[in-house]
Length: 344
Image 1 (cartoon, rainbow, N blue to C red):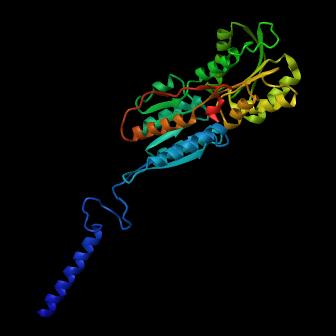
Image 2 (image 1 turned 90 degrees about the vertical axis):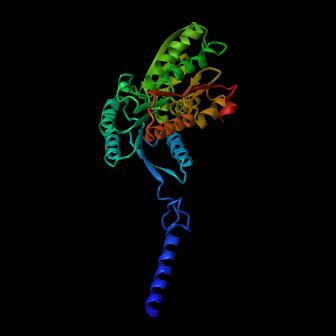
């Protein structure tokens, strides 16, 4: 009998020790796993598809998305972010979106390869009841009426960036009219004509220039540069060969193409600020440096930090069940030789 009592006492002691161990030292309020981590942590999976990784502006943007999500992780909530390269191929991006949905990701952030594909993406998200945040490339107003409360666009109004480009030239002492004939002779380097940003920057830069300066314009050349620096250089080099000193201003839909244009202008023996003007959009570091040294007339800040943070905030709102507004706008800012030091 004594042996039986001793055995039972020993067994009870072992069970008691095991219970203390499983309770994390006796704290019954915080369930933990064997490593002490909170087993009640809520994990959200966020799928991000960028139209292509080798784009200067979107490289900054996607890195900021990833960085900002990390700052939101806590002991209670974790955001696991998968960012994929659309490679400039809509079929590739569609596969990525399909996989995000099939794997039951909680929210999607999409930088469309083709803005015209937004309706198809929205239909997929609606069928799966998945919130979707579009960034950088704005879908049509009609598309944005679909799936209300669950889709949104975060970005800057491209009309504003175009207007600011026009003002950068119109606000010069000579209105950019170097030869004094009352007409601005210009070259336009377009990004991607299917992209609404390219469309609006091309249109509104010129209409705003005319409105502010009161002068007429003459378009000498307009070519598609696909947001690419090498293409920007080639287009402007060819234009300079064909039109020479007649070109008074070069408008580029983004800074990458403007950097290429600046190389072509230098190679042609022209000097920005003296016998030609050059403007871009994005305020990339290299472009800001050129503005500060006179190599560009100006650029327009496309605020990737506030845009990316707003996109992340929208994803967080959506996975928590909050309804999204159709649009979240971030203002552009003109960068000129007078204020350029603030943006270096």
